Length: 67
Image (cartoon, rainbow, N blue to C red; front, top):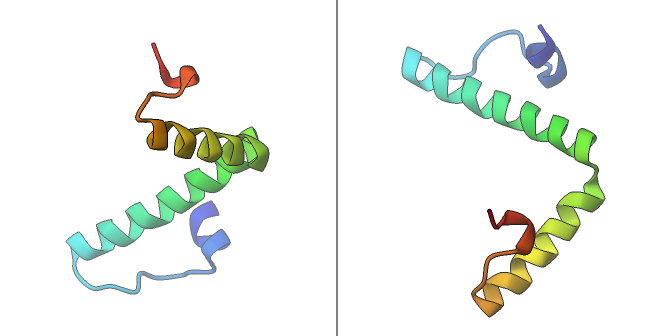
């Protein structure tokens, strides 16, 4: 219900089980990503992207991703 309501959908746009699975997977990915943004906040994601781009340029792993 929630996914279809948020997407404004009442049916799949594609035909065939495999294509519908793909369409549903994209819908759930978008829904989950929007939930992550809401929980962590946009600032966290922006900081992560900045830190990640700096580390890619320097070829190192960000400190908060090291185990």
